[in-house]
Figure 1 (cartoon, rainbow, N blue to C red):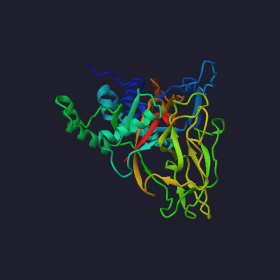
Figure 2 (figure 1 turned 60 degrees about the horizontal axis):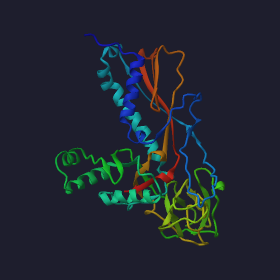
Figure 3 (figure 1 turned 135 degrees about the vertical axis):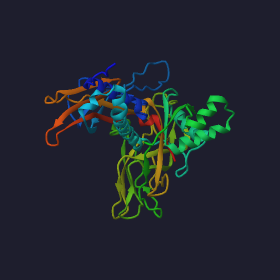
Figure 4 (figure 1 turned 120 degrees about the vertical axis):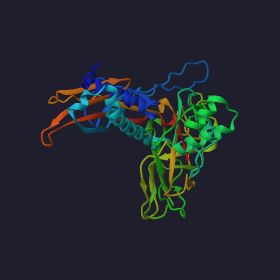
Length: 413
């Protein structure tokens, strides 16, 4: 039986399927396909955010302002894979053509998307683990799950994306459990752990390392000025604020985007028990903050940090028990100028991936676009008169964003 002629639609459908099959983190986050999108790279689209509420006190109804239902995501990532081919290639079976070309092409694009998503770790402040030590036991991952539970992250739709070192180590340690049959065989042969500490655990090479800033070990960062806090209404961006500091070594890069630190005397609070505007339960550990953008000290060792979450001391969106005192010590997680793997545990609603359909070129006859389940791929084939060759390209246009970074936790390696 003759092979079915490979059409652009067949290629686009196969490419879309391979993209989704090869995504890891991309399949575990909030995804939305915006059909009415008409812009190009650099444009923005809106996605609907899940609504958050707080518990009110007493019999009298207290109306609550619903948080913004939509958030804007910049569609700023245009990626493609292209190759040359002969006319004979189009007579292959769909399966053979996919195995030879489409699958490896879309695996590359899927890894690119996953790395983009994992790069959002810089927005996440909750952190557990020991920098420089690979998480390898159940308790290491349970620490991440516990922190998420303490921060009122829903127990369903949790995922842990770990690097291969951590995934292999914890899979190997499962061998010490009283597992039998297929469970032990799977852990040993494939390093698959499956569900662990309320997480769907995935091992991937796309976990990114974070290199800490050169904040000078010999210097001690200090808060410069007491009562630096804001109300939720005045917090900017993803619940961020500026923090004025000093005490750093002169003229050095103090902290890099993604650095995590604590402030002496500023403790975390449980976000759920607060009722109306009453105070929330104080946790037995200091609140962690992430640096949103690189900060450099002035000649006097001063630096203004843009941090998240904002320091909010009361109300439904309270994040800490108190504002930092003047000269409160800043303690940065990890050694300076050192790279640490950033394994990520998160709820589905912590991060968003949006792919949008690309315009179809008028001048190409061999073209197709397929969109499904929040993903979109375009294929175009054309003839290069200069090289006398046929060429084909597969394109995607997408954007990523941390929409609720409080629903995630970093497990440092």
